Image (cartoon, rainbow, N blue to C red; front, side, top):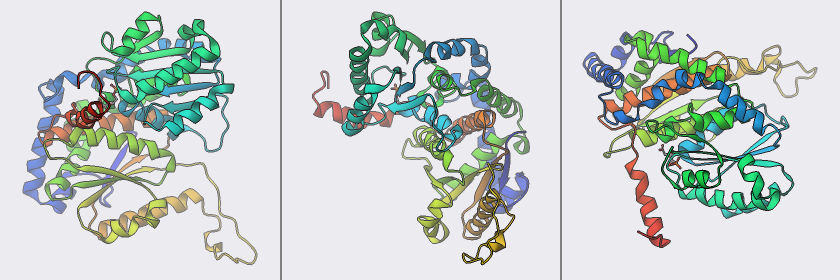
Length: 435
Ligand code: PA5
């Protein structure tokens, strides 16, 4: 098994540890609901069951690796890829790219994100920056009508034509959108742009293992086959195993819902690896948009430790006890060994011979223990090493557990009606026709 889980400080996640902590009755009540939710997902009888396509993506997309290879070959000549999109059409891509990139390494090919906010400063300087770049665009929007990426795309499309001429648009743009509907699909048809489809039955925040994520990742030389294989491996475990001890999605969903039922309604997803920053951002969208409905749901937030121990550590240790923690623990890291200094003027000689990763993971263990003693429960997902394979597994685990968690509190995990409220107001104020 590629992912290992721990509850509190026990070496194994089993029902007894939950019972001891949350009480027998509550543990079994919630376990029953969690198991039922998984059954409803598998039988496709749950709320939002028309959006369960994400479950089969690993196996399905593994059949299409050659298509992604073709896109990669066609786009290899460009030095800059601009990925235009927001929410589920943005976060997963950035999460994987950043998790795998090597700090300070100057790459031959660069990816830039756009359309994920409305900052004119950002877009203006991006357009200037592109002046000397041999760039191409991947524009992603399931609905094909989202304002932020639509505005960015209008500017970038014009820039592309100004710089390379109209004849290049069919060679330098990939559109990923609905197969029939939306402005982007119309544009792709009209100008015969290269395109791919966001499957009907896959919602935005569950789409990173579909063409939405796989095309830009393949263009940036991410090993998407490994990513999908890792996801498929975890899929087999999660979907086949019905025993709590063997199923990390059941464990994580049970843990979250036990906390929610005991008035802990804020979850901190934490890691000691800063390269996971955007994985945490992606997870926040996944859980926030899936669960926060009908005036219910756990508020998802995130921390990078040890950095945030020097800002929010105090609150976590001694603030209001309405929080619980989930930890992503990556065992291996590039290593550096502490060396001794003759005069020990910085007092660090006691660490001589110890690796920096060992010190970082000691900080993790020490903090986890302090938080648990301070009344902050902990669930740890341990991953041996950060690579495509294990990221694929982690993504699948989070997606499946998210579906189970939301259904356990009787919420539809796959819609997002609340997102429309700000848009309606904004469109009215901007006098968009029809609003
Ligand atoms: O999960 C979702 O469906 C949303 O968060 C979308 O990903 C986001 O709003 C972007 O939508 P679209 O891909 O239609 O531009």
